[in-house]
Amino acid sequence: MIAVAAVGICRRYGRRWALLDVSFDIPQGSLVMVTGRNGSGKSTLLRVLATAIRADRGTVRIHGLDVRTDRESVRRKVALLGHRTHLYEPLTALENLAVAARFLGADAGRRALLARLEEVGLADRGDDAVQTFSAGMRQRLALARVLQQEAQVVLLDEPYGHLDPPGFLLVDGLLQRLRRQATTVLMATHLVLRGRKICDLGLVLEAGRLVFAGGAANLPEPAGADAAGLAEGA
Amino acid sequence: MKDLLAALRKDLLLQWRGRAQLVAIFAFGAAALLLFSFAIGPDSAALRQHAAGFLWLGLLLASTLSLAESFEREVEEQALEGLLLLPASERSLYYGKALANWLHLTLLGAALVPIMVVLYDAGTLRLLSLLGVIALGTAGLSAPGTLYAAMTSQTRARQTLLPLLLFPLVVPVLLAAVKATSLLILGDPMAQFRPWIMLLSAFAVVHWSIGGLLFGRVVED
Image 1 (cartoon, rainbow over the protein chains, first blue to last red):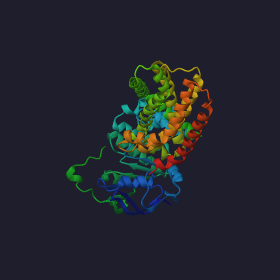
Image 2 (image 1 turned 180 degrees about the horizontal axis):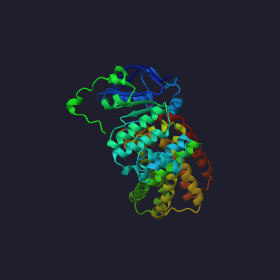
Image 3 (image 1 turned 45 degrees about the vertical axis):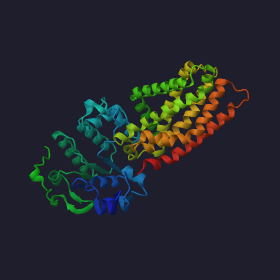
Image 4 (image 1 turned 180 degrees about the vertical axis):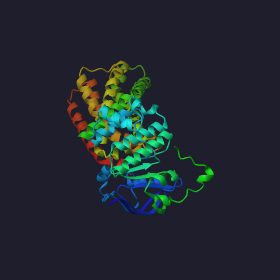
């Protein structure tokens, strides 16, 4: 079954095309790496799939639902971890999860929320305001909030961003868990070597165009990775 | 209803966490009332005559700070977008925020009344009616104010744009609120209070209805 079907997506910011005629199909349960240079359109693509922004042209279907006409139904199936954390800075970690839980109709009790925080290694900081958190801790909390949605399609924009090596392993573990649950995951990242190991499929964007779509093991070598000595965590 | 209660609870919690800012906004409103009294000078009759107008001007100026502040937390980490993507109902998010803003502006208006009484010698024995006028007038401010605060929250010049957009729209509300408050302070020999209250109520109903309808268009891409 196709979980995500994109046909000819175009999205423009002012005069610049951030996405140009991007088409692909993603089977359900796939772990997909989306890569490309800065400004190649990775984040825009994920935001279009998440219905955070609209495509100027083209169609996207999530589990058969059109993101343009069935937006609310699509949103029940999709969760997005964006560049911004979607968190309220003055609220505590537990309060942030409670806010989302109440809208989702999920258990907003302290015990259930602490279990969510435990998953991302923040159980001991549940009563601290987010504004006291480091960038890595915010990223972990944002991940917990995404997992809270129990979505069928999870979109992760730089999930390893700001994380320490144990955080890298945490994300790897979460991805494996999502795979076991047959959740479809699209993950934008620059960590190509890591992506090759854990992902099934790969998409490469270049200046808004899709230049590669295929098995993750066949992803092209990241340009200059060796010269730059890119570290990919633990 | 579940989403509305969740939104209201979230907004009240955010206001509570930002209570230091609310105290600063009250101080701003009180300072505005003090400055207006300097403009009139030591003429107690004139001060009393203009007290209602000054109260509502002070409240209006303070409300722009308060309304803009209410969306600061929504945009800094795109938390509002996060709720929309859950998905939370746009209308519930609007009414939750507008209700929290209404409550805050009503409390602010009530807190400014003693300042008005002291500075302008403009007391009234009909305190409950005065609170009712403040509640109705702030309802007419908070509904469009919440909508415009959402609209301007993503812009760089939001502190300037919000009053520019809001003030012309709320002039009728302001006029009706000033007139009703003035009748309470100065007396109502012609029994005009009730029609002005009806007018204020009508504005509040219109603004609250339109705000809920338009909010989705304002916050979506």
